[in-house]
Length: 207
Image (cartoon, rainbow, N blue to C red):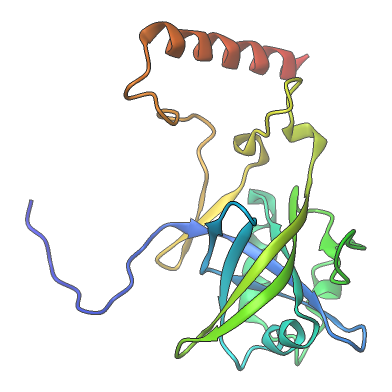
């Protein structure tokens, strides 16, 4: 294949689409979108988000040292985009989008009820990088819609209709997997058992 060279361009795509909610010490709440987010450690459970210092949420999070990650569904694509292009300095985005806010269990920042997955975080450190500062945070707890959990306690994120962001556009996450971790070296009998188990879960979900 023939390839073009793009010097110094970050082309890591697609990325998760998330809305971040935060509350300052005066009790004011804001929501905005973050494209650069990632898991960085298992024990302790840590994730990171990168924020421009000029963003209002940057001020709120730096002041409270807390925030909540909200994973939106396909139905919330327009609302998510709106929260990314409008400033909380000018309008109340939460009221404009008619979000239902619920109190956090471990942090003061609330979470968006309409999002099926919410992750409460406590900031451990902030690292200035350049255009963005990196916020490293510990995951204190997560809220998962019961409809996404099967009888064995497994979370099926593919049932949530989540979305991704790639080069300026939003895309749906496919519901059908093309493989599972370790399938390249697994025995055929193991793979067949997993397929049968997955079919049974789908049938049970339809009942």
